[in-house]
Image 1 (cartoon, one colour):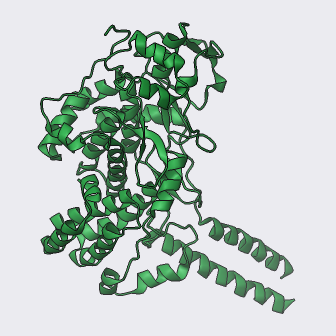
Image 2 (cartoon, each protein chain N blue to C red):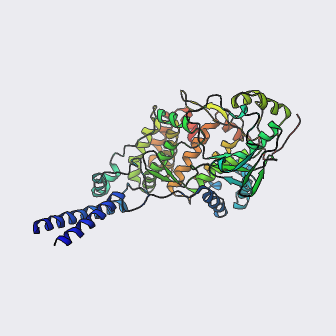
Image 3 (cartoon, chains in turn purple, orange):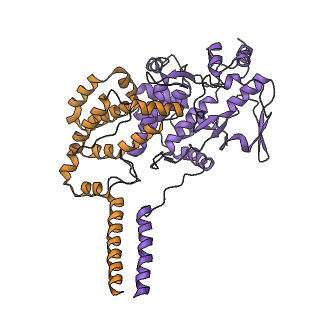
Length: 313
Length: 169
């Protein structure tokens, strides 16, 4: 009887443990480099059915920006701008040179506490510009592969752990993140690979003498290469953030239109639609420095989808 | 000793009952980890789910949901922390809306009730602008699905501030 009682107690302990854990394990996020591969592959089967359901202006703009409405056409937009992904930080890679000469232009005037975090960062454009500013070739070595940042289309993106399929909140709860949402982020990063309008010697001089990122943008207000973000206040009374587009056809405009098209897809689940709607709204908030609706409606204005290197003006 | 053995058996049976109740709630309940709502806390009180499951279908459609709408303070704090991405609070709010929207699009009576919640959210001046715009989008979709809501939608649309309206379009 005593033995039976002991067995029952042991069984009870197991059951209590099961009850406490809910009987299921919390999902483990996929490794970001595997996930990005899966996401880009998922583009092959993406129907883009939502594009035809957009209003005519937005539909036309989607085609201007992403090259068409077929999977083949849209994939071309991504693949011609994103070729190499790094994760998570540069510490695991050998960067040459190890320090840069002129770094003022890359630093925010008022750094945020702990530094801002991002899901993804277009390192290719940044390092290519840095090589021009310093007049020194920049490269990184990764397991025998050397990437040279010698062209405006280096197409290198650094991912963070926030590039995820399971987003955990501070309270321990989580939400599954759909591939279309992450592809919205990649649509944004891909646009940073375009050096629209090219770089002039004057721009490089401004970068060398700038004490901050904001300072450089003030010195070169027409600079559109790599579609840098400008500083803005989204909510009246809110913080100044370097996360808006100063010019039309920048990165936020691309991810906004992409998210709108995906959210309009009747085949997407309600969960996916809600997340994509939140992305569309959040990114449209960052387009307030110009009249985005007027730009969209003006069919004479088309996005310049070409990139250039050094130019003379 | 015999008495002790019976005591253990009683506890054991009680635990089995508790575990089976918990499993049942997780599979069929409205509030699950896979299907998060605004109340996305993992420790959802069992009583709450039981109440949801035992109420009549009509009461389910008319009960007050009580959306937890992100405030401007929450939004500003998160934007300062990660200015580039879709803020976490908005992702959480959007995911929380999904099951309610799904129910509303399929059930007109449920939609009539939920529309009031979205209306309150859309007009809440102290709430975050992006969250308000998300509520407006959903209210519009719901009115397009259920024509009985069109009049209420027109009234709501007239009351919206320009910034929220333009963001939702």
